[in-house]
Image (cartoon, rainbow, N blue to C red; front, side):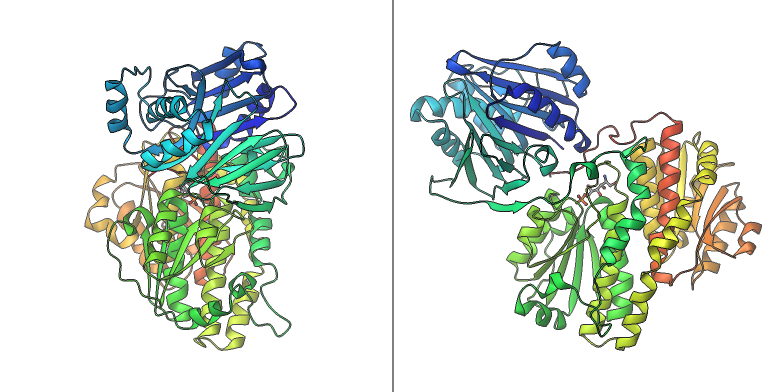
Length: 615
Ligand code: AGP
């Protein structure tokens, strides 16, 4: 979603801003812009345009916008089309202020009408321009930019991270946030801000996440944080320990391919140090408060809430926690959960899963649950993220930075984290014998090596991708944990290849979706060994009988499946609940190679954003 970068310090701002925007490109955007203020109150330069950063570079055409304080923005359109006019930064009526913003000001139409009645005219369709005018008008009344921002924010509703610069104070940036990420970077000679730490780590690793309702004034080497009423406040300070190379492609053509291949290592990290000397499962993160273990022992219901790929990972909790820990589990899309009236008590555990920890729907669901006194456990990949801070406890997936919009290593590490949680709950509640828990966990230690074996089949999968790339529609089906991989396989394919793809419970095919099968139409079936394997084979026969071309994902040694499927990709044999961690890998590779054959923008597919910070 929108990327924000800001700099005030000794160096020319423009290069810092454009380089910073490049590191945030992965978030997904459809226009870009920069604003720089020159010293001596001489000028505010704004350059912005629709399209990729290369368009902005072309529009800048080698100009060196003078000034050492500035803002940069990549916009993911919410109000109005992705046009030059709608791109950020937006200026106020005086032309002195430039504003960038991530999020949605929900009452912008009322504010716009009010400002228009006072003679303001607007050049864009955006909510951001309205708030730029509002801040500008209040700046005339208060005489101080930070006071004007605080006053304006008392009047707006919605979620936002915003930053403002002012020609009349050319070494300061005012920033604020409510329910959208804004991270500040501190250095002795400069201060920076960004919508996520990836934009800052080239400059500093000492960062401070602004908290909801906080306003910061950044000057070179100095940051002052207040609440919305101007009282002194402090954000969440932490040190970033991953390095820049972790966020580079390392010789792969795309971040997505690199991240697919990083999965064995990422899963090994998630599994690291999960047992004590007696072989008991330990989850250090859940020892945080003395109450946590006791709370978990008394949980009588689990809700899992998440969005997109994280929701598919969350589905595994229903199978694993119900099977191993014997606690009822419901898995729900976060944006639905928050708007109904779920029955939550202090004995309800809500597991909120989010790679970024900044997905607005998932954060809102977690906050809703916490307000109802349920216990909230976050599973996130980003240390210090908003979701992590809002939760009672956090289980980190330790996958390392995930840059490609299409999530891969986050997904497999989330499943591993959920399996660990399920076994931990089983151990705490004595639903399994200690040696059973130990054995299950020990089996998981083999997963990185087994994933590596699946990855080695990439050339064969790439060849299959060439055959599937011409398809207009691909169906995926599976049963039990195969279902969540059918859903995830379809999501991956549609996200990056733009081929229409849907996943179904295999048993549901005959209740409707089978009508879509046409001669030669591709179907992907999850048919690994287990108690539903033969049922899936029956479903394969049903679609084959209607002309489908079937690719089955099956267990090593299952030669019989070749009688039913046209193509087979094999994965090693594992415990039934662990298959998703292996079976998703060929489907990730299949989607990747189809997208490459079709010439798609694999890492930044159209219309999508890495982190969805709006509703
Ligand atoms: C994954 O490929 C998607 N881009 C998307 O569905 C993503 O998983 C979803 O937006 C949730 O993101 P989160 O895990 O950061 O909360």
